Length: 59
Figure 1: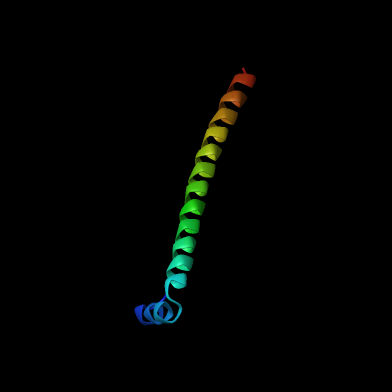
Figure 2: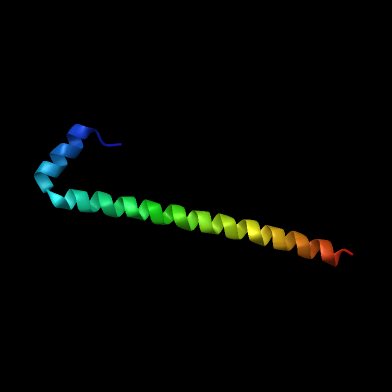
C-alpha cells in the first residue's frame, strides 16, 4: 500500500482531492465486497434448489 510519507505528500500537494479519490476507491471496494457476498449466497441457494429438484425427479 502507500507509505505514510507518500500519502502525506500527496495530501499536501493536492489537498482534498486525494482524500476524495481514496474515499471513492474505498467505497467501490466495499460495494464490490457486498455484491460478491450476495452472489455467493445466491449461488448457494441455487445449488440447494437444484439438489432438491434432482432428488425429487429421481423418485
